[in-house]
Length: 305
Image (cartoon, rainbow, N blue to C red; front, side, top):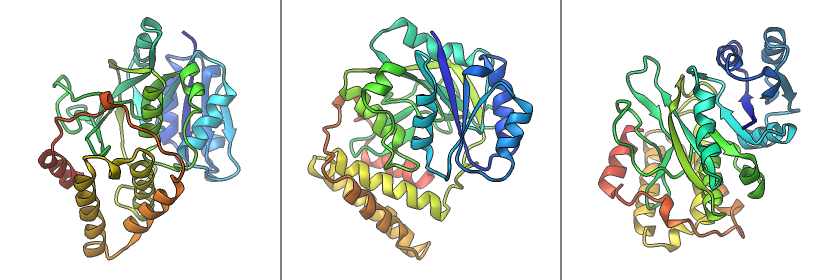
């Protein structure tokens, strides 16, 4: 199976070079696409100098993750699309392992890889699991590799493979989502279109994490809050049985922003995302939800995030 590997980068400097060095040992560099979101810091020049065979697409300004991925996908023609964050260094055999489920099952539309925290003792993520409110969690986050994971809803965009026909059928990433939530939304739309998700534990790599958008920063709160409001409305969470729980947890997050951060940004971002989702209503597929994640477990994970 042929595949295009798409890497979105923004002011990555030498970080993306480590990512490319590992990938170039597994993939023809002509199949690798770096989409730069107007870094302006020498990232593009560094990539071209060190990896002349890699395709580089320079965006005129920072268009966000989903839009940049869509541009990279459009530039290629492989049967599959592999996404790798610029702060992930893949292990040997990762790309081949990611593609294997797609080659084996014609109804498989997406595959989750396994990312490890630096030091490799703990899992960063093994795809995404969703609770009944559609809150997303990295499967096995902080746990030991090899433990039993929860229900796989979809892969995380940090290390994933998609069948091109499936990706294009549903229109790729929704470009209204600048960052955060776009992989959840794409995975739900793929499931609604009849495509299944698979996992590939042998497709592993080390993820630095938070290297592009700092966790807890105003940008992270803005983009994550927007995505949350968008998904809540698009998938009708507040009209479902999970509405009371969703409202409680959203109140906790917004309240914490007011008390600890003295900011209304989480609230304003959710309102903006809610408004943007008007007229996009979809019904989430029931098999994507891990109903074993109860309110107590969700609260525990919220506290640890």
